[in-house]
Amino acid sequence: MTAEQILKEHGIKKTVCRKCIIDKLIESDDTALTENEIKDAFADLFDRVTFYRSLKTLEESKIIHRVVLNNATVKYALSSHLVLSKIHPHFHCTSCDKVICLDSSLMDRNIHLPAGYKVESAQILLEGICPECQKK
Image (cartoon, rainbow, N blue to C red):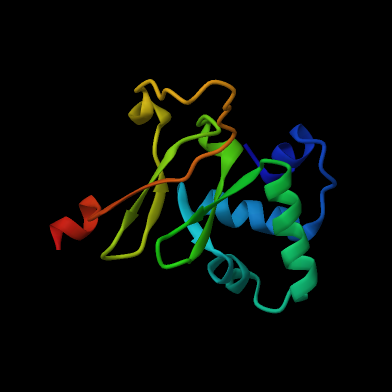
């Protein structure tokens, strides 16, 4: 799916900045990226305000989602491209700092909440060493 198709599917205005952000996340091969990793790909193509407004719009539209690591680093991943449920775990490699989204089937255990509670989002972060780093 292309950036233009994703924006059209979500009814979001197609701006160059939004397309560039989505394209960079598509190119990342399902790896979450920091703001700087995304922004550096465009050098000085967009001003700071435009970039952050675009990130915010894409996140509010559920096109991208944020992953907050234990050290407070924020990374972004493309939600619609991953075909994962809204609530899914992430894996953070403590060696190379790579973050990937994992299939929600890892969370197929029933979570019992007190009556009246409804989960809308969750941050589940698994940390360890990725296969590439284990080979080193």
